[in-house]
Structure formats: structure tokens, C-alpha cells
Image (cartoon, rainbow, N blue to C red; front, top):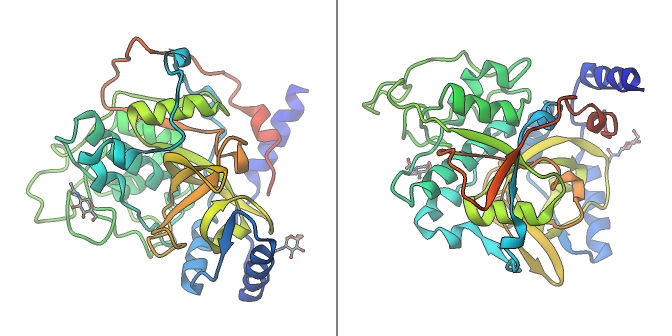
Length: 352
Ligand SMILES: *[C@@H]1O[C@H](CO)[C@@H](O)[C@H](O)[C@H]1NC(C)=O
Ligand SMILES: *[C@@H]1O[C@H](CO)[C@@H](O)[C@H](O)[C@H]1NC(C)=O
């Protein structure tokens, strides 16, 4: 039985990952059918260049195979008897609102794994320092310099868990998440399908610090107990936004507003996002999710609301986060990860 599972696992990984093409006529048909359903969300046209970018960026998958090996951070949940119906990290930590509120655009580079980790790390550096340290952790540095994050090239998918590990072991420099020339290594990757070579220098010549001096390090990274909504909520409430991995279905390309629930179209690929809160809209519970498809995606400035509490599109399965300081409070403890590499999980994955 175990051998069979390993075989399935190997076959799954060997297949090339790519998002199936999605034509304008398919897009129009899906939009019309979704809006005729009068469901919890509204669909509408997404600009053709954005759709093409999304498809390009989804050709590499987020690798989830090693996440089972990660330690789990557990909160003593009885100490949090009443969780709020809604929560927003931007409101809880107003001094970090400008950092937490940033929406990035990965463009055609399959680097969602780097965006969701670099942004959650930036949020948590600010939150842990009570707003005294503000930094944009450089997506560019992570994508180009973390060779272990990605089996082939940083722009063709990668591992969220290894990205967090790289922050702990090697550190990551600062850099604007867009074309603003701030920090040591600002983003130039948007139009790139192949990540450039790692340069261990500050590419922003005006920055005035050298590369090694500018490295930011974490001390701890972990996952939150899989499919445990309360644990995820407590983690976000007490320490800030987390990284998650979702299974993108084609109808997500035409999301506009409302609480997304899969309705139509095929599975596309795994994709990583950041969760910063939750709420209830017209009776439906949702996660407030920051995507990396730019601010013009959808009608919520690049944010999405995704159904909460049903592990919909696997959003509650792989929740990862880290800390600048490894000291745990008395209300939390770590348990070691499994050692079988998550083979059982992989064997039931759909798609490919
Ligand atoms: C972070 O990046 C945003 C977007 O480029 C920029 O407006 C902001 O000033 C940056 N913050 C820091 C602390 O560098
Ligand atoms: C979904 O997949 C099926 C079978 O491969 C295909 O016939 C269909 O056109 C696909 N739908 C879309 C919207 O791509």
C-alpha cells in the first residue's frame, strides 16, 4: 500500500504543471452562468492581459509535499472561548496597516509562494515590533536567491515551507514589492517568466546599506493544525496574517466581489495567498484573502473573500507562518511533524 502511494506521488510530480488555456468565450460563458445563479459572489470580465498573466503564473505549482513534515503550532484554544465574528489585521494593528494592506502583482512569474510568504513575513515584522520596524521583505531576493525553494526556476512554482526556512537560515533583504525604487532589492520580476540569477548585492544603488547588512532573519516557522478553523483564527488574531495554499478553479479568474465558492470550470493549479482576517457577508462566513494578481483584479482592490469553515478549495489545509522571535507564550506549544512526507495527502490531490 505504501509503495503504491509513493508511485502515485512520483507520477504526480513528474507531470508538467500548467494551467489549461482559457479563452474569452469560455470566460464569457462562465460569467453569464455564475451571475444567473445569483450565488454568493459576482463574476465579471477580467482584462485579457491579466488573464494571460494569471495563466502564465499558474504554470508552476506550489509544492505541498513536504508540509506534513513541518512542526505544528498549537494554541490552547480553551483560553480563547469567544472568537469574534469578524476580524481584520489592518484594524487590529493600525500602526502596520500600510504594510498589511499591500497587494502585489506577480505578473507572469509563477512566484505566488514568494509573494504570500514575503508579505506575511513583512506584516509580522511590523506587528512583532509594534510598528517600530517597517520593511518590505524582497520578493525578488527570495525568488532569485533561494535555490532550494524551487526545483527548476523561481518563476515556475516553489515551496512555501522552504521559503520560510530560507528566511530563518539565510535571511532575506528588503525591497519594494513593485516598481518603486525602495529597499535593497526592489521587484523587477513582473514581466519575467524565468527568474534572473541571484545577485548578492543591493540592486537599488541609492539604498546606502550593503546586502549582508540588510538581511532580515526569522527564528521560527511552522504550520497551523490542518483544517482547524479555530486554530487558524487564533493564529491570525494573536500574531498576524498567515500564508495559505488554495486550489485555483477556473471561475476564480472572473471573480469580482462577494464570497467566492467554486461553481464552474476545471481545476487549474495550486496557488498561494495570504489570509488577514474573516467576516460574514449575507450570512456566509468568509476569509479575507490578499491575492498577488494586482490591485485591479476583482473589485475589492485585489482582495478576495473565500468561503470559510468548509476547507473550501483546501484553503484551511496548509496554513504556514513564522515569527521573528521564537519565544512562545504560555498559551501555545509546538508538536513535531510527521515523517512520511505527506504522501497520503498527495495521493488524493486532484488535477494534473
Ligand atoms: C513598502 O512598499 C510600498 C509599495 O511600494 C511602499 O509604498 C512603502 O513605502 C514601502 N515601505 C517601506 C517601509 O519600505
Ligand atoms: C474542462 O475539461 C474538460 C475535459 O478535459 C474540457 O472538455 C472542458 O473544455 C474544460 N473546460 C474549460 C472551461 O476549460
